[in-house]
Length: 159
Image 1 (cartoon, rainbow, N blue to C red):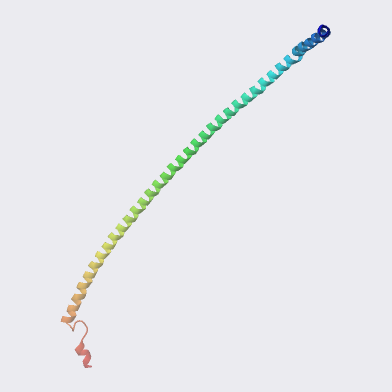
Image 2 (image 1 turned 90 degrees about the vertical axis):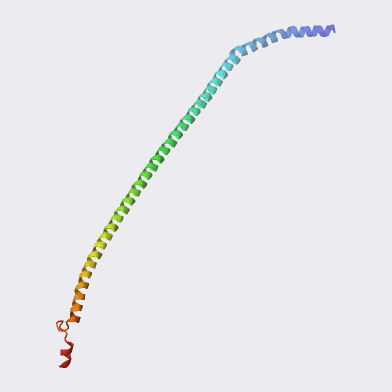
């Protein structure tokens, strides 16, 4: 067993320069490659995360602008609808006023026509009354005075 320990001790003594060289190589790798690589990766991660965050912020701003645009568009459409409704209401009022005015004119014309017709009827009645009186007087005269009327039935029958 002594011999094994001595061989082991000899092996360790011969491995010390290799271990020292390996530790030196690890330290050099750590300071020359690993740390700068970690810094570059961290910077890259920061840049990509920053870009992602900026992109998210830009997307949120774009969504806010789109929402604002949609609200403005909705308000503009509502205002246009209100204007159209007001114009439609005005047109309906104007139409109702025109219909009322036309009806009033028509009623006035009907009333004038009735008045004119009544006046014509009164004139016709007066004229007919005068004609009736004249004809009745003439009929009475012809009955009472047959010789004067120009109709001589006795004289005309003897010839």
